[in-house]
Image 1 (tube, rainbow, N blue to C red):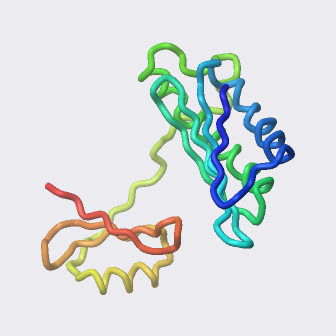
Image 2: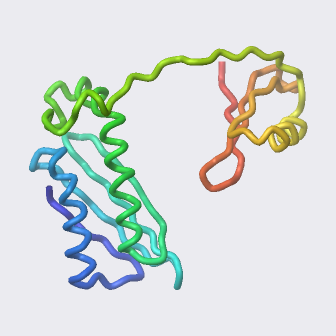
Length: 173
């Protein structure tokens, strides 16, 4: 795999370069040699470093990012995220590419378990406005809340974003 480092507000030294190359080399076992890995290093402030890894292979891309106090800790966060994506999307990507995007011997069937529906829940949707739905969402403590918007008559979903704020899914029919 070809590795390209791009740094912003940071001067890459040999030590960080070799550590990152060594850790990213662990991903070589999943990809063919023509894959490309681009790593973005950004010093956001005195205490926060952002490391983003993009792996491009056969017109597809995997991407993960991590924040830490230094780039050594950040790469330790990012590599497991990428491996999780690889395992999760393996069958989908193989079907899409029809050329075995990943080396087969790296995967065992025990690690991949198909998703199954284990619970069905029914509840009555009460008409409410967005402010009421946000209050209900906060009281429940779940990561999402489904409600019927009384202004539009449409079903909408409030969800908790990774940054801690709320998102709203407003489907178009």
